[in-house]
Length: 252
Image 1 (cartoon, rainbow, N blue to C red):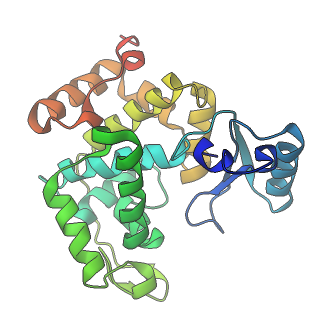
Image 2 (image 1 turned 45 degrees about the horizontal axis):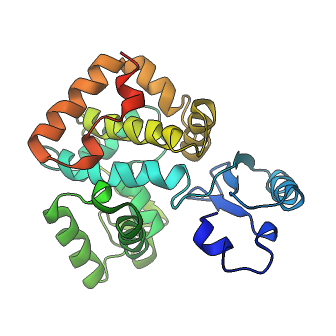
């Protein structure tokens, strides 16, 4: 739970993070914890998550976006770069080929583009330039919200939604910059002391229902390859999300 929320309470120890992954009915993840939560409140949160059939992951440090949404935010910036070369359906098809249940744009449609826009603005308020992306992607997202194309709840977003499902053509793309940016942010999360590598890896697995975590993906792709992709993307875009963090550099 972000400390700026807990600090306003007379008894901050009673407040715990309890954050689902979208879609919450299907995904097992619940992030639980915070910097000031009491052991009693934390235990109640963990037990509640287990009672409803979820997999709780304890985070001992409060930070805006926690673990899951910071990785999702990094993906949101990186995907703007991928759109230089591929269409949304091509990117999503490639993600599903990696074992993910949902593609990135499909997930945005399920969350709601208005919500995604608000979250991104909140991240920029807190983290600054790191979550500033390509201007054209920001403009496009703002227009989608202005036009009422909010995703699944309005029937149209990046995709047309019929009977609760998105129509996505199969056309895979090269999404290494997207994966590399998520890996990079995952290690920044570890650097910030929010969670260790094992916990971040588990959050990713539970949040996506993938057969492997983001740290596993890093091992599969190889750290030299990831750093090379980040270097190339940073040179082209100058986006902070592609600047390799120190912990990732140390993996060489």
